[in-house]
Image (cartoon, rainbow, N blue to C red; front, top):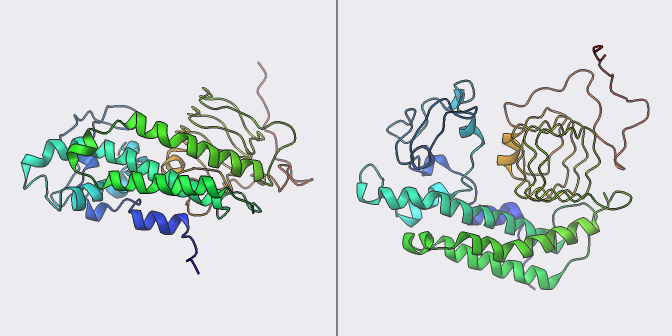
Length: 323
């Protein structure tokens, strides 16, 4: 009898897709450039160690990064690329002790991060195609799609274990272009089977510019928000169940009270970049960031099972100043 398929969490653990800073040579603190902005208080060129990087490759101000203005550091996720480069690709060669590997090691970080991010999405897509993840209640699946997705996982995993030369020569646009149609098929199938389907047609905001848009309490169940710019958007109390959020830019978006249960392809990095509170509902495996706030005492309840709020539980409306 064949063994049961592993969960996305188990597969991601096997593939090493969770960042392990203790096994990394602080690559993100050296390889990447910083630009003085709301995310960073300083300018730093790529290849220069951050002033806060200690000799043991750990951050000297890690508990105070946000307070010190290094917000960008708190939302960055290498998807495990840092430790793979440090321990596998370069077999434990420390860039401080082996300066000859510095340039290729640093150049490889954004490349392998991209590859690992694709692996992260593919593991979720496999689970969606088999009905083991995503919207509750889905039972049927597409064996052909599952087979194609697993083959893609094997190909991309093999690439991730390649030499620095092979990885740096990889055409990332072509790689993503070959994977995206599979992710889209998995997304469409899962959303079509979702019990959270809204009445009428699902919203399609793929690639849209919704920066700063007021979308409080919006019904976005099953919506396509792939690559959508939602920077600073007001999504308080919005219903995002089964919405496809692959590549959506949620920096500064307010997710307070929003329902993201079963949201597709949502990553912890996206959650970390957003704002929210204790009433925000997240998919299994994702956690509320430490900088999110407690729910206000008069917070409205999250949308119910049909996208509506329970009767009698209406948020108090703030008085608007006269103009």
